[in-house]
Amino acid sequence: MKKLYEKSEIWFAVIWIIIYVVSLSMADDYSKSLGFQRIITAPLCVILTLVIFVWIRKNDLSEKYGLILFKGNLKNYLYFLPLILIMSVNLWNGVTMNMSAGESALYVLSMLCVGFLEEVIFRGFLFKAMCKTNIKRAIIVSSVTFGIGHIVNLLNGRDFVPTLLQVCYAVALGFLFTIIFYKGKSLLPCIVTHSVVNSLSTFGAEGSQTYQMAISAVLCVISVAYTLWILRAEKNKEENRFISEY
Image (cartoon, rainbow, N blue to C red; front, side, top):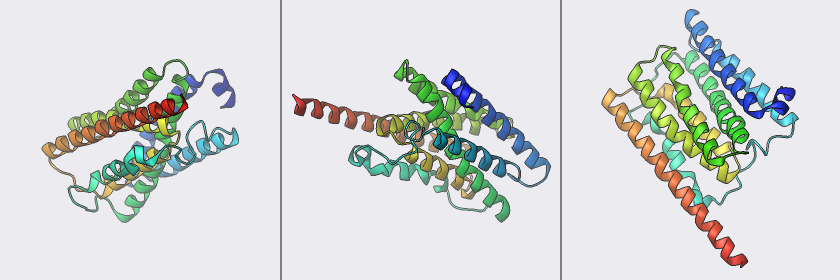
């Protein structure tokens, strides 16, 4: 891993994206064939999480990839209240048990790991590799690839329309998470939000297609509005700092 990383951080990120997408898709398929959801996927997610976490810590890259405490001004981020709202989105239509207790436990475990893996791979590895040359392009690519990556859910049996809606709001959320990481230097708020959203999906009551479209639109609006607020607040802070210095 170290040699590939030192040779090309972009290819390092791309290879990890491929490993993540392919291995989890295969694990989901094997789990279904065994008749127990996530029985293979959950242990695999834990292994991948530990491998990446240990590698980052071993190579003193925790600060680079945001595995540190948040460094921004919480007031500029509305004390993360919009993130708390986003975390609860899967429960807005009610609470139910969509799986057995055992399957639910494995699902939550895997989703907690997925939140970490996707944020570190897309917001950490890919974004950090690209922002060296062009920050705007890095933000766009990190956000869009994160959203498009959810198309793989079609291969796992999900319907087309819900998957398309998921791609749309995932791009918006990806953009928000990238800005939070870029401005606040910490990936932890993104990891926590991502993990909670995914985990609570197993307890959420599924709504009609119209309801899903409405929720997707709301998530997009919240994400875009919150992103613009952060950018404006950070810009004002930088301008005030410039004025005070001169």
